[in-house]
Image (cartoon, rainbow, N blue to C red; front, top):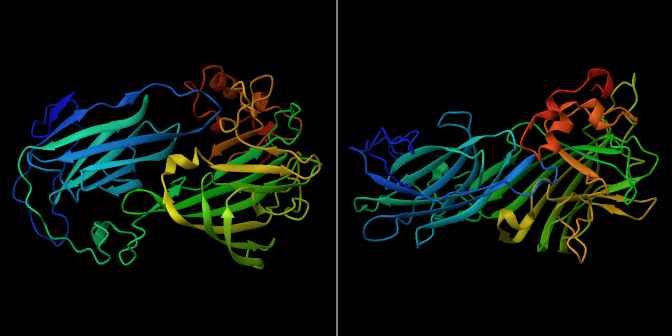
Amino acid sequence: MTAACANKEDPALVALLAMANGGGSTVQGEIPVEVNISDVTGDPSFIFDTTRNIGIYITVRDPVAPASGSLVQILETSGSATGDVIFQAVVSPEGNVQGSFTVNQTVNQVTLRVTIGGQLYTWLVDISNVEEIRRYLLITAQIAPITIVDSDRDGIADENDAYPNDATRSAIVRLPTDGYYTVAYEDLFPKQGDADFNDYVVELRYEEDLNAAGKIKNIRGYVRHIARGAGYRHTLQLTLPGVSNATLAMKRFGFDNTTVEAESTSVVPVFEHVEIMPNSGTTIQADNSKKGQTYKPGKRAEFEVSLATPVAADSLGTMPFDLHLNVINTGHKIHFAGRYFDANGKDLYLDPAGFPWAILVPGTWLWPLETQNTHIAYPAFKTWYESAGTASVDWYLSPLADKVFQR
């Protein structure tokens, strides 16, 4: 599908903006751009994910050569050209950008912004059924080089660079873009649990520093223990597949939210089963899972992983990466579905009924009270999973008030 950006009536073009790339100068006219759209559509396998990873492949050329220096950005948006940057990269010398970004399942569109020759082009992209955004942008006039203010010489103008004096980093991506995720586990693995998902619950958010090529250079995590409706004890661990010789800076805080109980920096030769939160018998004041209890938040941790070699986001998997529960009493580790399989291809972390032992929910989720099955506490939950995630995607926003723990 090809669209000429000069044609305002073209249905493939939702919005087109042109502006100067800094310095207060004015661009005379627009540079026409033809866009070939070859997005990959389809529905990935349903494994109770409430977030999606979407690939992005962009090529920018003029009639003579690749348009090197062009900046590609993806913004999480609600129908406008503004929003939070969730991916950013400058095109390679060959004119290409390749990467991926994460959004909640409830997000149906993002903004694609491409700065070419000092002009900003903006498209709204419907991602309802998209797995990969693939666009070939052909500038129909030859582009003259422009001068940008780029203090660290990473190819990204200072005005778009979160770290204008650090060539190893250029953008900050927050996951989620607002607030926290809630991560909840059932801890009876390999036995089927009672599906109240309150055995071990944390709130979590990540920040990623991307380099100019759109790869992850640093990961910061913010975790708080918020419920433990179980008799077992646990530690929370993180594996980052393929990551070696990373530097881990860890800080843990007490119940008062300010007292630093532990602080350390170390090099991790292989980033597997790294402890993020210690023994759950020491990290929460109340189980926060019974009716009538007053909510008492637990301890929290902050950490930063500085990667020796930047990695593509999709190599780390979907949210919340491989954040897993180590059950001290049983010796079992509990991972999210979709990561580990047996020799026959069976997912090791889906129970015989096809349910996971771990779920991630966007926002401040109210987990079910003790013995209250999630199907009961959230009536739309059944519709959601029976439709393989295509209906009631916001099921977690409509609990029965007397079936969930009130924070």
